[in-house]
Image (cartoon, rainbow, N blue to C red; front, side, top):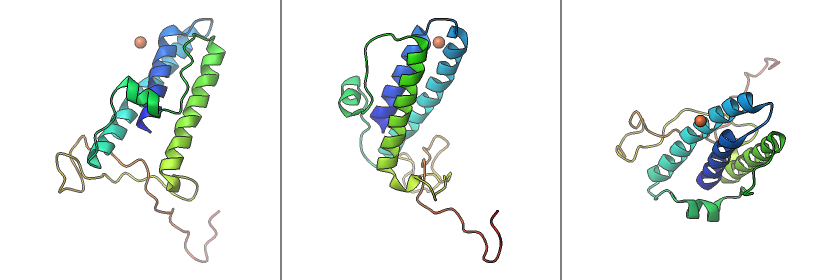
Length: 149
Ligand SMILES: [Fe+2]
């Protein structure tokens, strides 16, 4: 998950720097917004790995060996950049669902925090504690006798 997310981050940043053509300005800004979101996400994933008492992979070599996202090595046109980013985002989603199978339909996101590595005895963690991306709690059922629509 971390390798895929970091590879998507780098690909998005690459395209932010290298996009050309009539859509340059809007795509440059869009890709910037996306890589900034990804930077926050990879930090949360890495800190979650640390909260589970493992070291987070943190080198391009490790990411390249673990990522499911292809690094093409060329500079495509803007339309192909978008197509490749959508495919890479799909790959991250696929990886997330394979790791957290309960994150599909019928579950909901929560904002519960795991124990923070610096504060292992706490459930709330510190201010910078990573948040669980998803728990496998099912969504609440509607009350019996009430039409959920
Ligand atoms: Fe920039």
